[in-house]
Image 1 (cartoon, rainbow, N blue to C red):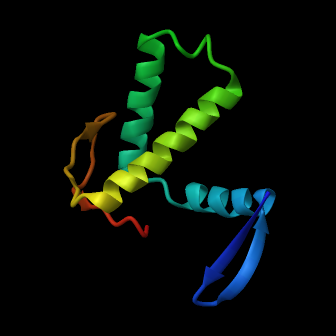
Image 2 (tube, rainbow, N blue to C red):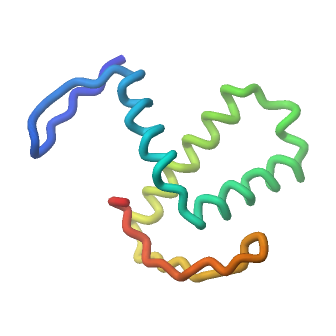
Image 3 (cartoon, rainbow, N blue to C red):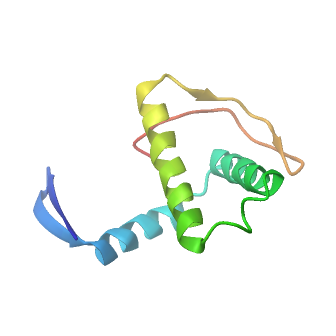
Length: 101
């Protein structure tokens, strides 16, 4: 599978490995407090329902990827402000969501 990309800097194609590499570089460099909060809630959700033991690694990865996609759609379609909350004893600053981050 390939992705043909048309951007302001030109047109190019990406293989799935190249796309994954680009996405992983973004993820590693952009840890946000709201990501930690959502992942913690996702983990709690799976554990409360004893789902982790019945899901394959592929299913867990697909669920995580899909949650990220729908989170992005949610931010793009709504005017969302993330209010600070305590996470692991540390105060998280308020932040306005910018889908382009």
